[in-house]
View 1 (cartoon, helix red, strand yellow):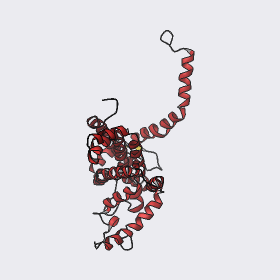
View 2 (cartoon, one colour; view 1 turned 45 degrees about the horizontal axis):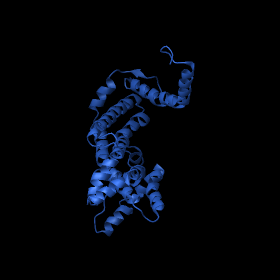
View 3 (tube, rainbow, N blue to C red; view 1 turned 60 degrees about the vertical axis):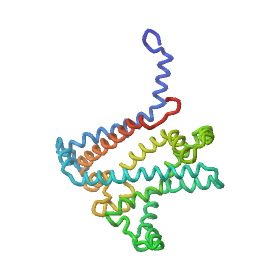
View 4 (cartoon, rainbow, N blue to C red; view 1 turned 180 degrees about the vertical axis):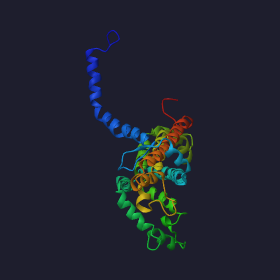
Length: 299
């Protein structure tokens, strides 16, 4: 830098840098920030996708406060998130611990555990629709073999959300792989030192594995909650929000408002409410992470 200004060579470096990230910048502005700002404007309009939008001011926000289905959808989403995410984390971490142990055919087991997470959504839904069939489904067949009464699963308001949570446990492969990568990064010397001190398997897990894995746990927790608040596919394909709105999740309600009822202005309003909720929970998790996340070399 000469006289407070960038030299010609430095300007060339800066220009090269912006050219390198230009595709990402175009995508960010055109496909993320632009549509977000557009949807924010739509919250103050009434638009049916066919005629020009008409300005209605805060009418959509006033309607949102009085719409019982908004709060029903938020409750269903919160139920799914705060019950499903801990179960998903527990199952994924257990699978990662098992696959981290030295086993014969380890690569085969890792592939088998990961495959369900890359199964096409429609094929996955068809499979679970058969499993949850009250008459001939695999789930009730197993219950009857154990001498237990069958359930209605996704066809009963009481069991519909737990059924979708159980279905989601089938696709924990991505979370499990991230946990497995974190486990492989823990120095073996820490376990050896704990073993010398007489620590059992639970003490080693609690005082070595969990603290060293806490950044990975935080990442999976944040991503899991964000993803669960946006649950859509399984409910749309299997229940379409029923029975009795018991699986009407917020994103599904947004879809119904915007693309089935063509009420895009109000759908955008509900979408922004969901954005604020997700942002609040994400910031809360990051704030609380200072109390329990350990970063090696920073403490």
